[in-house]
Length: 78
Ligand SMILES: [Zn+2]
Image 1 (spheres, rainbow, N blue to C red):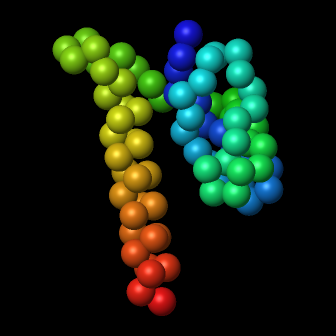
Image 2 (tube, protein in one colour):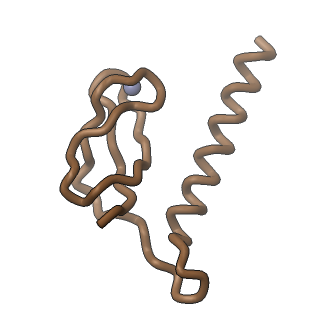
Image 3 (cartoon, rainbow, N blue to C red):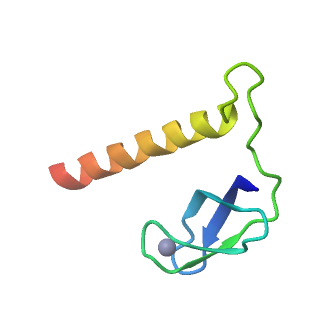
């Protein structure tokens, strides 16, 4: 079963949401490519009964994507 889990990077501390199999404990940081460890916190993914989509996860992903875009913009302008 594929679900969304939070992974915290052991190198830079970046917290990433990753779609992985529920038995997977290790992922790779999207910022520095080091190993990220799955956080114990309950997964936020809830199946939306109407669309069958991961509503909460999609919203969180969109917010995180927005932050990344803003960070990239700041980096470009400085
Ligand atoms: Zn990292």
